[in-house]
Image (cartoon, rainbow, N blue to C red; front, side):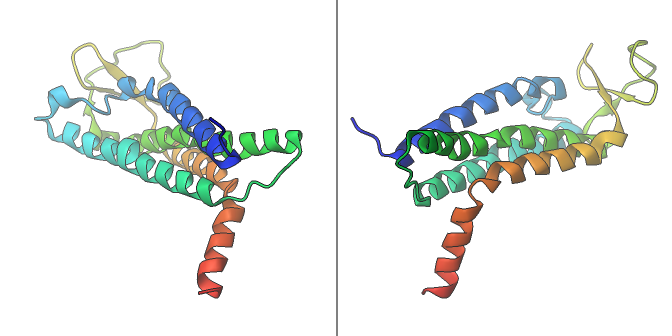
Length: 183
């Protein structure tokens, strides 16, 4: 079966998106994003709503839009080196967004940790920095949350997503121009 360049790039994007999603998902258990066993607790339901939006709904829309845009992108390079560049730029670059979604999640949790977690009583880990507040969710589970880094994590998350989609900016501009001016 012969694949055209757009199909190859879509396949590479899908593969790397899945790989990067798996890497970032390995950190989710620490934050108890999907702690369904404690669904009866209000703070867990709040966290679940945020997790479903940031880790499920937004990435599905992102993936669908990027996949559609890759089908509309013009890959007309005949040189092998340019094809390799296209594969990396359009296939791998947009796939980095899961790291951004994860940073957005962390930032949201750090903005108002008392809204999402139960504050731990007493200092649990004597080796942790003093400026961190300790939260707990289940027995013997501790989470250190530093509110000072919330905005930084949100900013880094947005930068990851913006840089990820920036490779497709020429296609977005071309489609917008075509839609607005050539109806």
